[in-house]
Image (cartoon, rainbow, N blue to C red; front, top):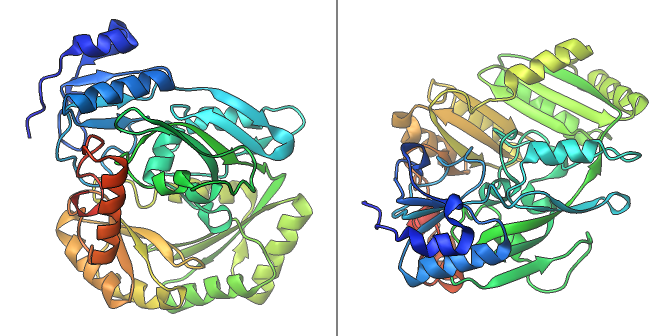
Length: 405
């Protein structure tokens, strides 16, 4: 699909000529090249850019840090990239309430550094998505990206408590607020989570925070037996402990369990696991090296990556089905029944078949075959209805969501 020629002067008047440029090769979105890149600095400028683009039938793809542009399907059209790089900074931080508000173009790493340095509090947004150092808050929300901390703290959907956003016609909307128990109105922020920029451009986000733990303790069990690994993880889930991380890595053959607490609390929980379920406690140096070695699983390399979901009780069945060389790397959060698997592009259909055989579901994160395993017609109809309601002109990231939405 050839991008529509864009009259740059229209956007020069909105954001300034120095913040509008013709697109370069590096601006391609999943292989689709736009005509121009526009970088607004305020919510009002985002509104004006989107209204102008929609009135000219231009397709717009929002871009944050650019770390997950290959997630989802390629857009069916991309005339304009809307960069949020200038929409950044912390708007408000209420450390006593464990809440912060930041603009969508703020990097996750920048936010974490600022929160950790707050005198007398030392807090953190408990998200650790892949490629998180350069990821922006808006991008993390749009991709619903999460990592090992999901076991205890959840996903962006669980931690976002409010958002400001702009629809494709320029309408500015707000959802939620700055208090954790805000229940007024529709929770649009959660609807936008994982939407891949197809519904609105997020400009500001409010998040629930947590204190930085004083200490950590890590327990691992290593085995070549799928049943032994899954039994160990299930045993951890039955104990009176609160792990931050329970990750099963395959074919590495290791379950990593981490406790974040006070020094005494972390040590007591780790000992309780080893006594009741097995495994061994790592010293700090080994714990750090193990975490570093596994941190990018299954994202290293260029293979296709898919998110998977299965009943926790079927975890062993799923791992067995994927143990015949079908997948290159898999990380499973067995207490939740979710994970991510990396495979060669020509193995995607085999992986999807193995997941379905175990009663699970699969959704592509990276690589070709974005619609592999999409068989829920009711869900797709609902997604199309929401898309039509919020973006009737089809301006925003057309085709990037499941089912070509």
